[in-house]
Length: 133
Image 1 (cartoon, one colour):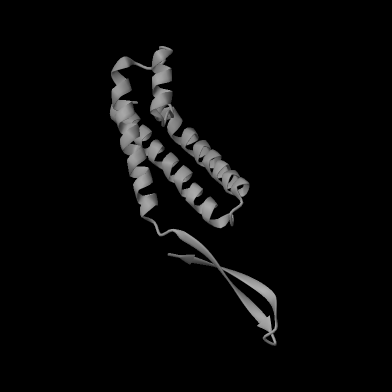
Image 2 (tube, helix red, strand yellow; image 1 turned 120 degrees about the vertical axis):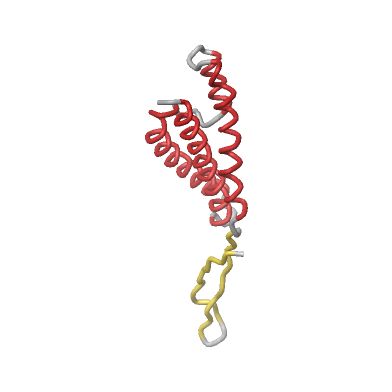
């Protein structure tokens, strides 16, 4: 693999990782109805799934670091060439920004509810709706 392909794969993988982590965090928090454990579980599952996909597809090209700390750790262990460290870190930072930026521009989910009354006296059904605001 040439360096351009490695750097593109690393930047793309970092962007997708951040899209998955931040996007699932926002959705999990919004949809968990205040249950932090459920929100964290949803975020962890989504993060694991996106990591599996990007490591499997892009790992053979770039090594699947997707994080400057991982790149530095590989370099300190002598498993990454010095000349590639700064370009890797640069594309990881750019990929992270490009991944988070569009997620933060999406409308935030808002959970609302309404009730249906029987004969105007008691609530019999609670219907949840999902509004994008």
